[in-house]
Length: 250
Image 1 (cartoon, rainbow, N blue to C red):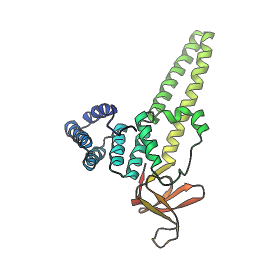
Image 2: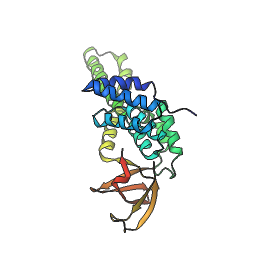
Image 3: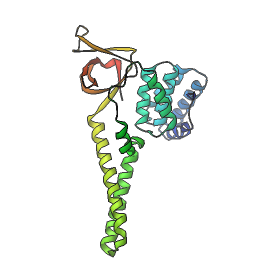
Image 4: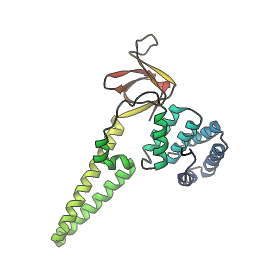
């Protein structure tokens, strides 16, 4: 079984940390966390990496390493929370995918909202590329398309038309995907159950009817929220309120 170690992506992370102000304290904190991780001091590694997050470092490799540290510390809920956050930034990282898939096998609940394998195949670019990569691809393709259209308008070369049609199709696909990702990020939010066992109830109070129970690592969709509770959807017919302190918003 593959070991959960800091990957070569950590070098990229170190450069990102070093570029953050103030660079030296952040870099030192990262190195302290790395050393703690290698020594098996998972709580110290978690504390160091989370302090970087609190300092404003937003990096997929950092989130991945946090997930690894939490998994080593036998905290499945937080491990999957950070893996989910990392997947939004580096979805094509094979080590992250491996550890994420393994962590999912440790959860007690079945996956609530399962994605269709056919959907993942037909729209593979959405699932294999990060949101930032899709945005940049859409911008670049738009630039290429409009440049090609300008050249065609001036020189009227017919041999450019097939290439322009292909560029237009790719531009449409990536632009639509970028828009969809934006709308999804704004309107659709998910969370991960953090506590070992969380009661999902019909209301806010502990005396409200318990509808069902979810366990650490289960991913749910957020429908509404208050200051203290979230209305979550586990499946189409399983909806209820859970304490905000028992979940982590992705």
